[in-house]
Length: 350
Ligand code: HMG
Ligand code: MG
Image 1 (cartoon, helix red, strand yellow):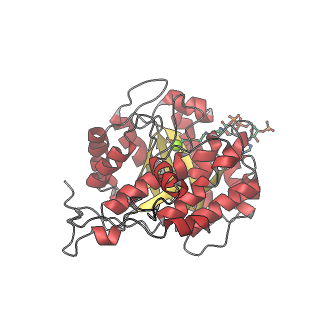
Image 2 (image 1 turned 90 degrees about the vertical axis):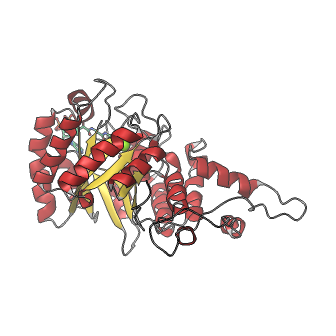
């Protein structure tokens, strides 16, 4: 284990969409845009900003056009949005979103509840979506949901997942994200399925989209890394869930993911403190504390008053991926004492 870890992975931030679609207090468009701006400033390079679904079903994202109109100019950042059909694509194409994301489920019951179609009907509808998106010069991502279990049907046959990834690739999607929609996956099955999909379709075609309902998301990231996955979806603060998957609590928190990756010597290009600030700013707006363990632990250090001249940031453990990676290559075991960050207090006080 840990002999072929990558130097860098991509964190695909889905908080503004998967996170906010599940909040009971809807955020206004101005606050959403400020949140996205803060994510960009933290160094996030791929951001799912909203979705163009029916506002009756997801009222929290009814302002998709407004949010897209206010997206920051951010060279090097790719913004995406979920689209369920051609109507959604037509709305998305009027904005400057770079990429659209289509979605279907590995289980019929979830697909029907979520988008009112059979899986076969969805695939047929998405043919036009992909063709038109490509013709308009936009990228296309695909999600397969309920990959490791369905809230209505229980266990899901991994062969159905492999077949659907193949169907989406045949339609022409760039990347398929494998959704553990209700957070039931455990590392061995994530490893086995990811390994097979990497072998069949190549690592560049794949991402993992993990929910942390049962606390296994980070362990599943490690399993995915070992299998060759290099793109991981997460939400700032651990926002989110799925409105059509009872019991699907928050996504894997971006801060927890970044902390772990940096600690393993894997770069993400993301500033953990700035990311935490982006999430903390949402708490008063949403009216509740966020679930991320790292956000909670950093908040504690920030709010602790200095005692006996001691720096309150002592022990905050902000890992630097470069100092964790030995010069000799892939062996990333941290041999030196991790440095407590000195700048956390000033950064938060800005
Ligand atoms: P439907 O009712 O079957 O749609 O809904 P329809 O085609 O029969 O049309 C009915 C009406 O809706 C028509 O209007 C359409 O124009 C309109 P009318 O003629 O009656 O006035 N309509 C739309 N309006 C705006 N935007 C659209 C749109 N499409 C049709 N795009 C539909 C089908 C898919 C639209 C609906 O079921 C829907 O919006 N569902 C929401 C699905 C959703 O957002 N789920 C959550 C995201 S998925 C997720 O979270 C999982 C993921 O994170 C991965 C994981 O965790 O596994 C991605
Ligand atoms: Mg999700």
